[in-house]
Length: 459
Ligand SMILES: Cc1ncc(COP(=O)(O)O)c(C=O)c1O
Image (cartoon, rainbow, N blue to C red; front, side, top):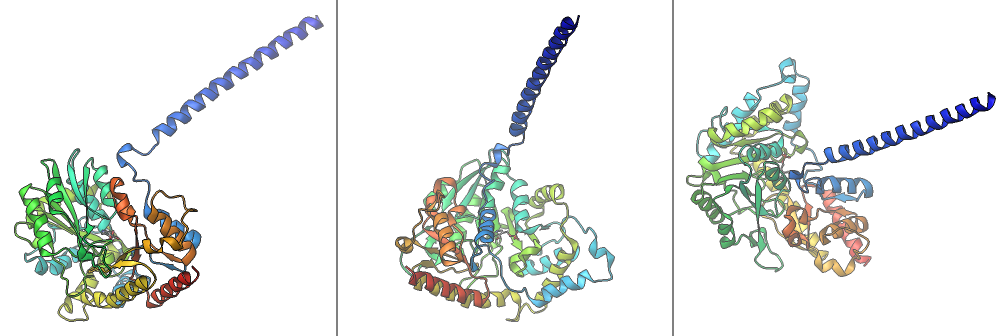
């Protein structure tokens, strides 16, 4: 009896154990399967290509990790915006008007679009309709996004000039389009070359236009080279756009940072170009408040409707207080538009000695900088310093990444690797260079000089 109960218990135990083992196996299989399904299911959609890698994310982290003494990487001023601009925002924050804290008109705060029309109408030689031809966006970034997503369809080709502001490529692919790249190339490698020495090959550019071309993206003044496209260069682009019925998205965020005797020409003002041009600007760059993230696009109403559809379904409306503050800031500048005090002109005057100082410092310390005609970046060839720096400890594929990282660690000066601004097939064109931003306090530019001298002396 006892023995048979014992046998029974043993049999039950065995059965239970094997049942548990089977259940565990099933669970494990289930878990493994669902883990596999989950990983597969939640991976980045293939159409985003290599978009997960961002030079900004990586270099902001680098700055946080190594704390270089000066950060000439990302493009923003390390000093205060004009007093009237920051005061406008402070006044709004403490204003008695409760509506300034609430949603405003989706396509642009009325006071801002009206002022944008007042600023740009005389510049483009036509009366801009504030409510149908202007869109306020979350920085120039979103204006680019709305212009590209609002027009590029699956299989459309978009011509992009390299080096390019890195999000163009991603946005085109996001829209299902195909970017076609053409690089600005230096005519010479002489000393004292300027951004005007970086040119497009006319034949190569013409050959990129096909019956699938929907858009060309222009950036003048140019980031990172500082090139201010000349009338002849713009006419070449405009004539090709007209011949092939192509839209031009003109990213002009550095429109006010142009150094004499160069002049910024808006491609929308060339004959018959208004109809096919979307021009993009940025309050961040115009008023040195990049953190406010207010931008805009202006173009004919029929094109604008396409941008509005994207904007109203992804951002809907931009912050009211910052739009109101930008509107008031424009009013101040409009009231002194013919005076040299107007920030639109005083900013470039203020930047010129900074540019010249950094160009000289870079030259004296072994770099070969391209002198920019516009914008606030200097692209400098670092290869003469190649023998002084051992890059073998850096793992990156491209030399400019290895150089800028090692240089930041050794010299304490952070720059950006320009290969980030080239397509995969042309990245080697950017490898010999580093990009330095010069909209920085004089004391930080002086510190840069000291650090470069110390680094050179230690070699
Ligand atoms: C060429 C270019 N376009 C667009 C932008 C984006 O401007 P925002 O900060 O207004 O979005 C930048 C910012 O650096 C830029 O350099």
